[in-house]
Amino acid sequence: MTFTAGTHAPGTTASGHTLVFPVVINNEGGGYDPNSGVFTAPRDGQYVFFVSAQGYSSNTLYVSIVHNGGPKVMTMSDGGRKKDFYDSGSNLVALNLKMGDRVWAQCQSGSHYHSEGIAITTFSGFLV
Image 1 (cartoon, rainbow, N blue to C red):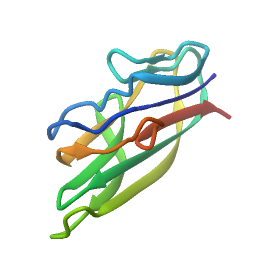
Image 2 (cartoon, one colour):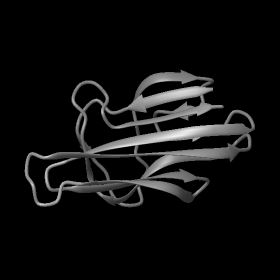
Image 3 (cartoon, rainbow, N blue to C red):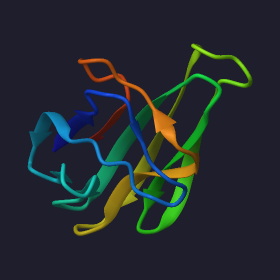
Image 4 (cartoon, rainbow, N blue to C red):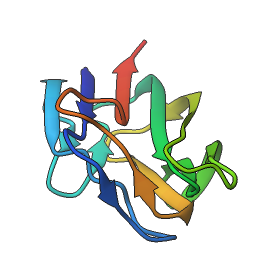
């Protein structure tokens, strides 16, 4: 059970919204849904999740990894007042999941993320 998904172009989101990563690089076990951005555990176990969010310009972007509605860890990307500046935030969490538990990346604050052809803003997870 492993997945990695990303974005292939810059985009925007809003606070409280799930980040959807439509570019699926790997989805062994089929737990990640590229239409909703949500991973659903196909079986019980210890899983590790990683999110990397690339912000740009003077925009801020805070992204959490959320388990069944509760944020567990958060990234921070803050360009400050600089234009044409790129800043990334990343974080990782290990979670004990039951079959059917759901995990996703959610925008906590900010709106703009960046990718250029190849995925820079990504979400990954795997069963340990």
